[in-house]
Image 1 (tube, rainbow, N blue to C red):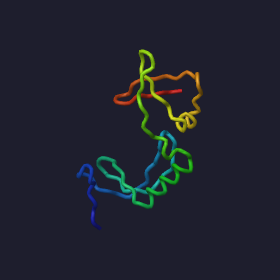
Image 2: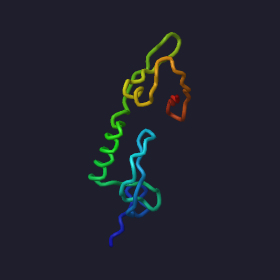
Image 3: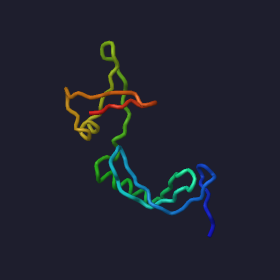
Image 4: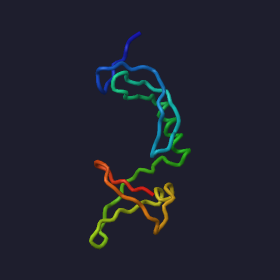
Length: 110
C-alpha cells in the first residue's frame, strides 16, 4: 500500500478518518476524509464536499458569509449587518450587542 504524504506539511501521512464539520458555529455532521498524521489537516473528496455543502444549505447557513462596507456615522464608523445574517442571529433594531477585536477580526456578540 502506497502511503500518501500530506501536501500541506509534507511530513505526515494521510490516513482515512472522519472529521466534524461546522460552519458559523453550526454543526454539519461527521464526514469521511483523509487526515494528516502530523499536522491534522484534512482533505475531502468531491462527493463529500458536495454533501457538506448540502448540509449547510439544508441548515440555511450556506452563503451567510458576505462582504459589507464600513461607513461613517457621526464621529464613529458603522458596519451594516446584512438581513440574512441579522435573521440568522435573530438580531433586532435597538438590541444591545457586545463588540470586541479578536486578532484581525471584529466580533459582535448578542
